[in-house]
Amino acid sequence: MKGKILKLLKDNKEDFISGEKISQQLNVSRTSIWKYIKQLKEEGYNIESVSRKGYRLISSPDILTSEEITPYLNTEYIGRKILHFDSIDSTNIKAKEFAQRGEEEGTVIISEEQTKGRGRLGRSWASPKGEGIWMSIILKPNINPMDASKVTQIGAAAVCNSINEMGIDALIKWPNDIVLNRKKVCGILTEMSAELNIINYIVIGIGINANIRKFPEDIKDMATSLKLEIGNTISRKKLVGKILNNFEELYNELVNNNSISKSLNICRKKSILLGNKVKIISRNQEIIGKAIDITNEGELIIETENGKREKLISGEVSVRGLYGY
Ligand code: BTX
Image (cartoon, rainbow, N blue to C red; front, side, top):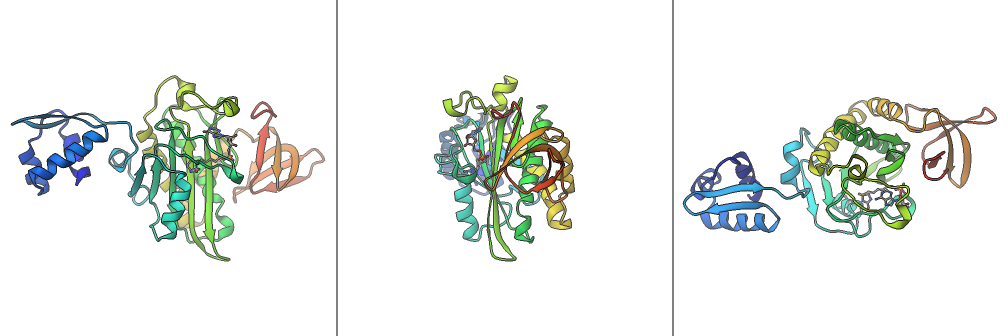
């Protein structure tokens, strides 16, 4: 009901809408309306209330709730349910709990802050309050568990496309980073629960440094935010909407045709690695060579100095000048 009242206020932004009208349209008592308006005000909505005129929405807060993101969505199922938190340990941890308990595909968990944001291999992810996009999408694809890493490529393509649509020229650092001016602006963490041949669920966690103003000392040379690079505060809700829209389109290709060709075209076109000399640490082994291509399965092909070609499914990649190599 709160969402419906908010929608009415948003649709009537130019004018006051009377309590009576809201009550008639939504079939809810005047007292309940007053309670919901009070809640909205507590969430940061600036609502003017004038007796005999009614209510008027002056401004909305910068929060990533379902009510704020839905107007930007054109998806069928991705993000149609958004669970929003003010502060939690990690959206991936929360999403896994929900998925385990039967939450359906497409549900998105978003938090304004993460107190234990996670990167790969137990590393941590800085997630300050209200300055980034910290979200996880629950997926239940009927694909082979061996193909789960393809979801990371879909996520990288969706985020890169969306940032590009905002007029910012981000690039993809295979397999799970988006970089801007050679610094990391987004990281993706895909986790899965599976049995031998069947996936129970996949959680794809996306962390975007949207409006972060200052980074901790230990990562300030490798990390950046969209705001620091372009000089403006960006609309987090608009960007979330774009990411979910792009994600659904690209993910549908995997689910319906067992292919990620559209995502890979973006990953190849926007790759910061292809054509460059790279160093990769994969399964405790260090490989130096030239990044040649990304296969249709999403693996990176490296040509070493002795002409041997290696295919990698994941790894820690550095390029000269990027992250200190
Ligand atoms: P990664 O292992 O590739 O990168 C983690 C490394 O990146 C850290 O060790 C640190 O050096 C650096 N780092 C930490 N925080 C930041 C930051 N905010 N910006 C840039 N660099 C940073 C990448 O792992 C995957 C990150 C996924 C984060 C999302 S947020 C929503 C979801 N929930 C959750 O707990 N994780 C994911």
